Length: 144
Image 1 (cartoon, helix red, strand yellow):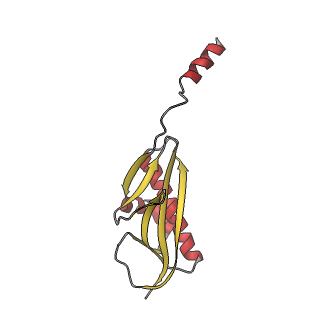
Image 2 (image 1 turned 60 degrees about the horizontal axis):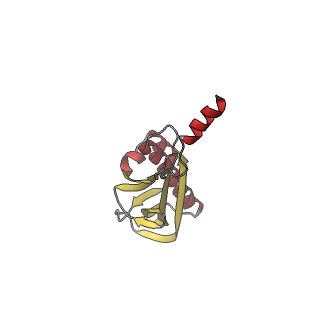
Image 3 (image 1 turned 180 degrees about the horizontal axis):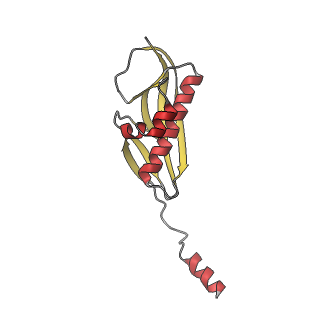
């Protein structure tokens, strides 16, 4: 009986099952307005997406990419995507601080090296258990 049960369970998981990779374009602003984002990101580094207007750049430091994944077990796609988006933003913030910058400009999605520049949305890819966000941005110091 145990052998039959195990066989039945193993047979229910097809080896050639399609892998889910759902592309989501999600709004930036609500993700940045969550209590976790406000608390963790702080206000010392400015973030400017796509071609969003920003103060004049005094010095360009360099461009960096962050590519993060998160375990999405027991979370909706949007919840998990917002969580990994925050992680990607924290990576950009930390790099800006490390390099002596005070802002990250021209932030755009960079999933699988495919650039998507938007002032209002970021790209997230959702698999069955893993969600991923990749961002690219220029670390700068702004003229004051």
